[in-house]
Length: 105
Image (cartoon, rainbow, N blue to C red; front, side, top):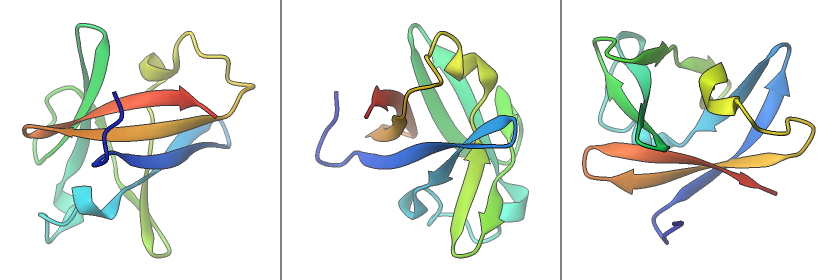
């Protein structure tokens, strides 16, 4: 369910991991990103992310590359995908979190 408020980024392969650029609107509320972790968690059949100071799920570090911020996706999220195909990562805003959906390009 992609809305007009959804943010779409390309999933790309770097070394043995799969990475995505984190949209800057997700990070605006934090002044010091070194204290914040990206938390991935699954509810029912959907994956969600939140930004928190304490790990409460699958915790991933936020890396700075030039002007952008990136993170690796957890392997559990990629399970069952054909990784020879290209995907986009769609961030869909919900109450205090973002739903994360992988869509075929």
